[in-house]
Length: 342
Image 1 (cartoon, helix red, strand yellow):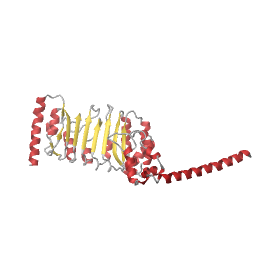
Image 2 (cartoon, one colour; image 1 turned 90 degrees about the horizontal axis):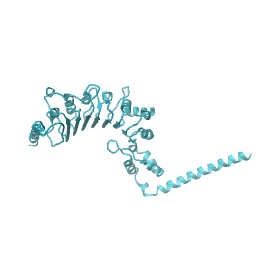
Image 3 (tube, rainbow, N blue to C red; image 1 turned 180 degrees about the horizontal axis):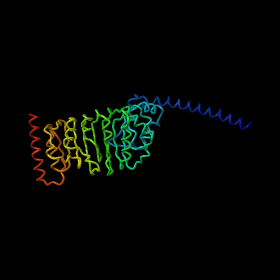
């Protein structure tokens, strides 16, 4: 009997403790509501919180304690939960994704993998389903992936390319694929399935695509194109031909920056030249690195009459050779620019 009485007494005390805790929480919220910080409009507080968790640069990660504002008070936690933009960046590791993806329902997602040595098992089934859902609902804004191995990146790209027809990519603005391994990552299937009406940036390092014609037919808003292929590909050349490259440039007239490094410069012969130049009136920065004859072949077919910060990197060529090839191009460029300005 004493034992049963003790249990009943304990339950009564526990109920009283819970009631006191609820009363204390209510008093704390009333106190916090009188503080100046609580009188800020929710959208202002949301902007302050967002500065802690926004993607910085291409692969900026979440610093330790980035979400500590959730622990300050009930009001701050409520504001954060009602600010979708706070959850557009889950961090740049699979461990971070698993922790934060449940909070982001409607915010445009900045999907980032920014480290090395991650194992594919961290990219588990729930995350795969979330990304498939994101691809279907067209709520992915940036895809920035870098890794030392190809399996995880390939797995992510495969997940973002569902094998059904409900594909939407109208929100994707930036695609950065940096492959640190010697085996190229093939992203052909990804480009074959999508169109990218808002895609402004493509940065690709040591990747391959079966048909560069996809870039011509599926993009038209590029402002930045950066291709860098250091290692030879075991498959046919991962680089576009001269005619394919010119087609890509011509279909993206808003290009401001073009960067073709090493094997990304097509090695086509002069008979591949197009009769018309690629009209790039907004071009501000141009960087070409490769065989000088092939570099000139590309330069000769670009028409950019406005002011330009021209940056050329030339290898294995003496000053006389550079002057002989680049000199006539610069004179031609200056003459065309002067005619436009006059």
